Length: 298
Image (tube, rainbow, N blue to C red):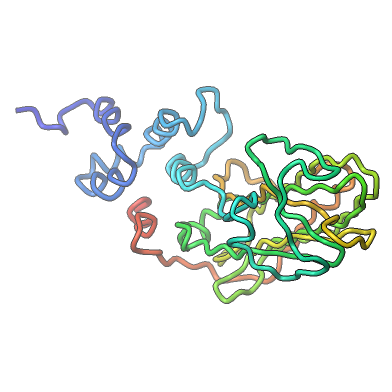
C-alpha cells in the first residue's frame, strides 16, 4: 500500500491547503521532518490565504512571512465592543459625563447627515460640557500573545468617525495609548482637539492612525474620545461619534507610522509619541493555539 509520504510533494502540499490551520500547526507539523518542511513553506500559507479569500489573485503587497500574515488575517476583527451604539452605552467606560451627559441617537439626527456606511444606524452624542468615554483592550484576552506583539509587532490600526450638527459648533478629541502589562504608556496618539465651527456641512469625518514599529511590551490598548459643543446649549449639540475601531493587521512594509484624516482641519492628527522602553519578552500565552507560537516557528 502506498504511504502518504510517497506522494509527490506538490500533491501533499495541495492536501495541506485544505487542512484547517490549527490542525496543520498543532497536529500535522510534528509528524515528521517532511511534513514540517512542507507546512513551513511560504507557498502553502500564501495559497491558503488565496483559497480562503484573505487576498485576491492580483495581491502584490510585499509579505515577509506568509504564515504570520495568514494567522493575523484570521484573528483580524474590531477589538472595540459596541462601536456603533447598537447596545446603548454598554462596554464603554464613562470618563466624563458633563452637561446633559452622553446620549445615543439614530442617524441622521437633527441637522445631521447620513453615515457613509448604510449599515451604521446610530451614534453617540455629547453635550455642552466635556463628555469622554473609553475602552481598554486586553490583547492577550483577544488572542494576541506576548511573543507575537514583541517580535512581529503587527500594525495596530485605529479609526474613528465624528461629525458636528450643522446648527452648532463643537470640539472633538481622541486619545489612543499602547500600554504595558503594568499600564505604562509605550506609545501614544493624541492630536490637538479639533473644533468645527457653527453652520458646517455636518459631514462625517474619519480619523485614521497606524502604530508601526512600536516598543515591545504592548499588552493593552486604551481608546478614548469625546468632546463638547461650542455654544453651551442645553441638550446634545456636541460632536457625534460612531464606527470606532481598533484592528491588528499584518505588516507588509516597514514604513513609519501613518495617519490619514479628512478634512484639512485634521492634518495635525498625524503626530505619534513614542514613550519609554521595555525589555523584549519571549513568553507564550498558553491555553489557545496562539499559545503554541513556538510550534509555528521552530
